[in-house]
Amino acid sequence: MTVGSKVKQTLSSLKSAKSTIEIYATQSQNEEAAHAFREATGMVKGVINDLEKRIQTLEFEEPQYKGL
Amino acid sequence: MNEWIVILLRSIALFFLALILIRIMGKRQPARMNPFSFVNYAVIAIITALISLNVIKNLVLGLIALGIWVVLPIAVDFLAIKSKWVHDWVNGKATILVKDGKVMEENLIQVRYTGEELLRELRSKNAFNLADVEFAVMETTGDINVLLKSDKKPITPFDLGRKVAPQPESQTVILDGNMLNEPLSNLGLNQEWLNDQLERIGVSAANVFMGQVDGSGELYVDLFDDAMQVPKPKVKELVYANLEKARADLMSFALETKDNQAKDMYSKDAEKLKQVIEKLEPYLLR
Image 1: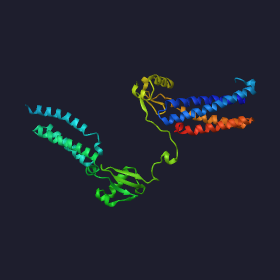
Image 2: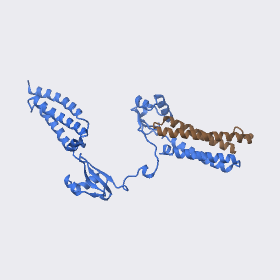
Image 3: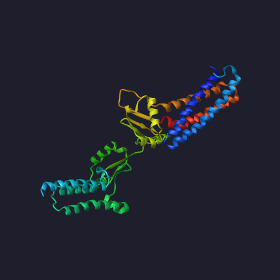
Image 4: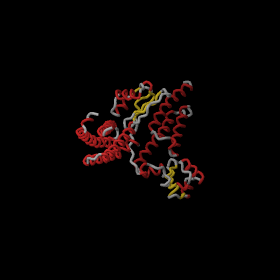
């Protein structure tokens, strides 16, 4: 397994976590809970952006593994 | 007129009259009444019975007596709300039986309790050791309420210094296989959402005896068919585990990479995820 594919795996699990947290942010009855979920979504989004950028760099460095 | 017809008519009329009067007098629990209220209700009941059985021949006189016993308590209740003095005079004051862990013997005599009776009441409040009791008070209703010593009190999340998610009340959305629209719309959901959720766990609404949606929007169902196993929602735990795993991954990437800039980014992101995990822990796990 290359570094690139490992990073991609982490990225996808983070994305799924983020979407679930987003669902909780909308369906929580309690304002405090909804706020915490929303804030968490923003932070996870930042991490996801970083990882996406990193993947681009990795694909540039190891073009033979692109798309895997 | 035949006597039996008189009694029949009086009984029917008084049945409804008593029903209305008791409703007017309020919904205080009979078991939690002070002794005088009990006497009051008893008098109303007896007068009603006597009129109904034609023992009190004169209907007007009976109704006057009944009216007085209904109106006066209501009037006194209103006065008690307005004036503290009337309130104390009517309801009496609570009597402190145990203070700072010491039994107040004079107060015990005042309410005519023996030590044994006090112990019995304490036991019924789950205080089996007198040594565990900090404070006990006899309310005006005769109930005894107990405050345990602070090291004997049940532990709460506050004592542990842990944050727990607020838990709003659950709404019952399915009863006897019927979807209830009002609680659903209270939650901002609709039948389509409910059908979707039911499909996900593989049951039809007709097979659900009770379905509740908790404060975080999770559906719990109890089926008519008890042999069938319903998957319990574990989504929150999964999200938590996912975040933990992602954080561990980021930390190992940070160790593996030789690119210093990337190393910084990975460890910074791992730190961010740690914050997210700490923030969401009370909501996801508790």
